[in-house]
Image (cartoon, rainbow, N blue to C red):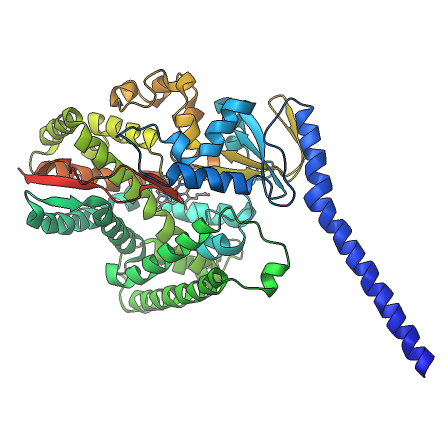
Amino acid sequence: MGPMIGYVAGFLASFLFLYLILMLVKFLHKVWWMPIRIQHAMNSQGIKGPSYRFFHGNTKEISNMRLISMGRPMDHLSHEIFPRILPHVHLWSNLYGRNFLNWYGPQAQLVVTEAELIKEILYNKDDVYPKIELEGHAKKLLGDGLSSTKGDKWTKLRKLANGVFHGESLKSMIPAMICSAETMLERWKEYNGKEIEVFYEFRILTSEVISKTAFGSSYLEGKKIFDMLTKLTLIVSRNAHKIRIPGISNLIKTDDDIESEKLEQRMKDCIVKIIQKRDQETKVSDTIKSVFLGELLEASLDKDDMKRISLDDMVDECKTFYFAGHETTTSLLGWTILLLAIHQDWQEKARNEVFEFFGKTNPNHDSITKLKTMNMIVEESLRLYPPVPAIKRKVAREVRLGEMTLPPNMELYISPLAVHHDPTIWGDDVHMFNPDRFEGGIANATKNTPASFLPFGFGPRNCVGLNFALVEAKIALVMILQRFKFKLSPNYVHAPVQVFMVRPQHGVQILLHAL
Ligand code: HEM
């Protein structure tokens, strides 16, 4: 018996040893051999970049640069925020060229800043340059909803969302937008002659608008979800440049892992409750408007397999739209008010146009889209302060992009912020607020390189909420301009930061004067 046990134990030990060796070889292949090979292959095509560092890639350098650049406020009210928000892209594109290679851990990432190449990437269908797979905390934030999913499921969800956020359906949401803006401005009356922090105000406004229009739920019900989303966003943001050893992260959980799991579960419970409540309401009355949640519910009951969606899909869609429809528009409104508070001449021009179109009456859809000065101001605000500073894609299979041959699985990093602050496209006054540059339209402003202006992305996966966001923001701006003059408060501290979106770290304080 004794020798037999010894034999089995020896066999198991050698098996374990071989297994460990195999795992080590696999690990080294991933974190050492492949990066060296890819770096070499790209260098030989003239694509340079900071050297790959074992396991962490360039993430530590990137984190340090960001800590320094965003660690304190800007010295003056400059709009030159690209070196501050994305210091590594700014430095390395100057050092290594417009398209350069950097490393997100052992993941090769090609940063592309040339508009023609960006167009090629974003215009392509999912099979060549698909979206990247979300992992960890980010996956808990957005799930497999419209912004992250691919293939047939994406086609199905996009069709559904397109129908809801365009045309007549969008028009039917305008009264709710106006009503929410009125509630906000009623509150503002108390601040006449005083300071008000508007970024916070816009967070309430945009969450109320998306809650009411898309989900039919009141702000208070949606508020819990927004609070949880905000917490999860902070977790994603502070872990964005941390590289974890695969496998180990399943065994050893950090506080953030535990917190994000809890938040994911609580958000799901909350959304399921809203869905169930809505389901009951629909049974009771047919008159309820066909908001987004209604469409989702209908799709969940569809007999056609190709159209039907599951409860998990619904939860992910709700999370996606709560998230996408909230922080982005808040950011746009916050920066636009800051710009108008600084540039009083443009505030006056915008107000004159508003009075010309609407007098003191509430805005309406048809005229909102005709406001030319307002449109130029919003476009210039989106150019200088694009809420979404970076977009990512992946290379599905070996492919030629311009003069380069890219290996499969390489990540592509496209930065609207970098492109919007490129003087070769926008001229020497690139960092100035000059809405006039949009007077002849976007094509004219970008000298017919449309991918040079991409606040809402580009191509088939551009922002599905584009019109919704623009109408909502313009309604709020029109109604503010009709009621108040405003200037920047001396307490405002200029500290744009990136926490997912580009946002003012300490809010936007203005002084209000009722008209
Ligand atoms: C100023 C406001 C907004 C900005 C700047 C913005 C920006 C963007 C950008 C850049 C993308 C493309 C991302 C990529 O290509 O990877 C995108 C996609 C998306 N946006 Fe927005 N967005 C805004 C408002 C909204 C609103 C209000 C909603 C919802 C009502 C929304 C829902 C979405 C969704 C669902 C996607 C994914 C679309 C798809 O993949 O098919 N966004 N947005």
